[in-house]
Image (cartoon, rainbow, N blue to C red; front, top):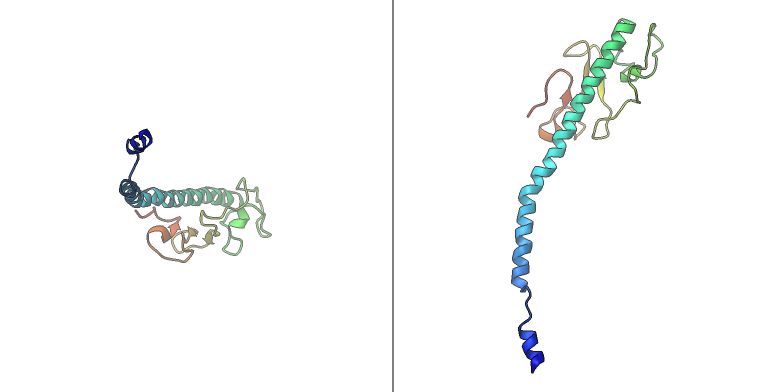
Length: 146
């Protein structure tokens, strides 16, 4: 008899209560998740812009030494390895090998550029010129679009 009373007095959660908790957690994850993961895209874009600015400083020092910016054919590689036609080259102008952008793609360099003496750009997440949001191009001649 005491066994039956002990079983009736046991406390616990019903299946309905557990389902309600799981649904609430799912809703919170659906609302908060995109905001948290969206921050990583902004961080990648900011890091890309900072790397492009570092290239700009290295390119300016290259120009002071050599008297010109690297050609499109020489590319950003000229900041690490002496081009054959670059007398007075005092590099390397970058401490490490040429980095890829945060999406694992090489930066694009053109000289002369369409927007200045040179253009440096990353085509963003999609790796294709143009785009919006996560796929926007990050370029040397303008600030990031919000």
